[in-house]
Image (spheres, one colour):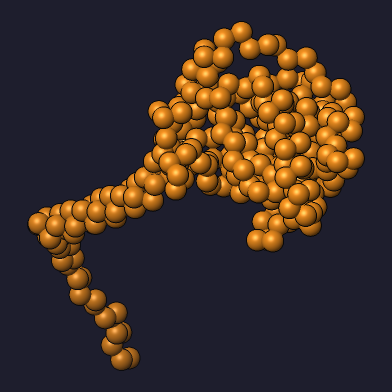
Length: 274
């Protein structure tokens, strides 16, 4: 985690909200939060600690996965199945959640206590996607759906397109709902350390590609301007050379035509008077 500090990476973020949490009494909030924390810990048991960052948002949590993109999917599936089975009950009251998943850029920073924290568009969009979800519903952004569906056809069949939603900032998001199909099989993690190493290498490649793309975009306007200036200079030099050639060239000699002899016209003979 220390090696990734103060960096921008592309990762999947799961934003979870406990519905009605702020309306509960303090005692009920404590019981609900304990139940929620236990469910979250169980769902994340197979994810290495170095591959995730968990932020407590008060009425929920935001989990950033730095390793496999499908980690966010299987967290959503685990919470979906737990809620459907009614296991997330606290004080005879079922736990109700809204869940949003997004794939985007986040900045890894340190908070005021020196603990790992995440900021950026990746987590902001995850929160927006979560706000569109109904009770006990899991929604995913288009960016996350396209990536995770490319990993396996089984993952693609889990989602259903729900259309476009507009947030309070008038930004449009296409969302996909996680259906009720059973969770597909997933290969167990044989060596989390190796998996984390490969994930880090993949993230570095993504960062390098993004940096190259940004550099090319920054270079395009100067390149176009340079080509335009060069063409103008070439045209000006060509025009000047043409004018110089016209000034240096000697005037063409004037060819005079020889004068033609004019034969005097003779008057016709007048006959003498009779």
